[in-house]
Image 1: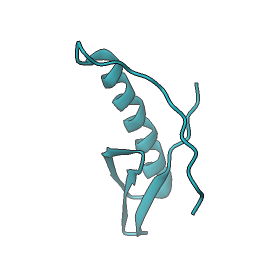
Image 2: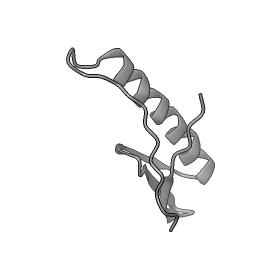
Image 3: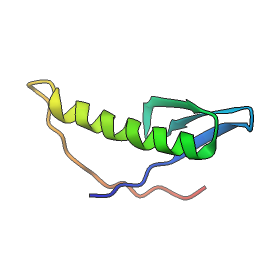
Image 4: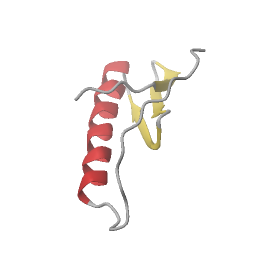
Length: 71
């Protein structure tokens, strides 16, 4: 399955920081845009692996789609 996420990047050639707006717990730093993108990809994979491995006994995971207006 493929999902798209928004990666909000701030900074300049001296260094970058970024976060995934749909998953606010994910914060990334790096020296280049390529490094930021690679780290974000790995962080998202790790996030979802952790959610699947260690859910609360009373939790239910349900995927939903929500249409939002484009900015």
